[in-house]
Length: 331
Image 1 (spheres, one colour):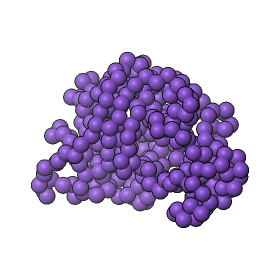
Image 2 (image 1 turned 45 degrees about the vertical axis):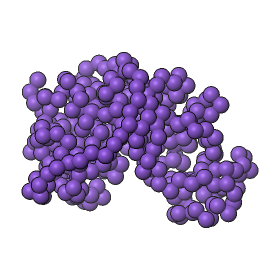
Image 3 (image 1 turned 90 degrees about the horizontal axis):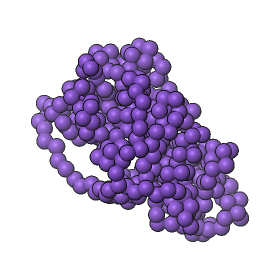
Image 4 (image 1 turned 60 degrees about the vertical axis):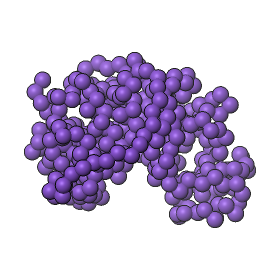
């Protein structure tokens, strides 16, 4: 196999760094791939994860009209065969321009099609999708419809951003006055959800191949800080596996689907979808579930894949340091 390039965006994000680490764990591709990395700022720990990184690039923010042009230029100049998005900010831009990127550079964007991403990003659309397909999900309304939800399920409730993530602006609402005390945006940008009374929370990844077939699912109990999993345990909880695979079979994402759920009275109740890779891909890769490697196998080389042979285990994260000179920062 001749060497080829893979581009990771978001060198400054935990998600981007995790994807890079997962590829570096791949015995099959570690020495076969040239790794290129982008970030919208010159400082990004992902730039310095490995001395084998081939290229580091500054790019405009994803909302910039020049962002896609820069991505295409990097791909054309560096034999890039595939692109992994390392931040949520870039997902819409890359997915909606996937055909153009492939046509002009030959690089495949490793993201689901836009309608799948839209369902996962917008929590009201997530709820409507689950309701349409008779899947379990907490009752959900926009802010102004709070009384309908209260009449149906009572207090407490969860208040959340309709589209944002990283565990920001999430509040437990105990009474009506809390709704207005914690209101953080316009009414159509806030959702209220039925409170799931459980301390057992999972993030479960199910991976689909290019034909929409589920090829593996791995559950992880986790604890969050600043939206990032800082320790957790991979186990084989049957209920979480079953419900995540049901969702994937209907949604048919391209590659990874991450389902957030809680176990309530023995039942797995999903409350959020992330139609993308996650910040714990390197942890899964360590235990034998390397979805980055699987993406290259199946989506680039049309190989059959099986992600069912993973091991149980635990993990924690800690601070680490990068050392570099000012001259080594991308310009």
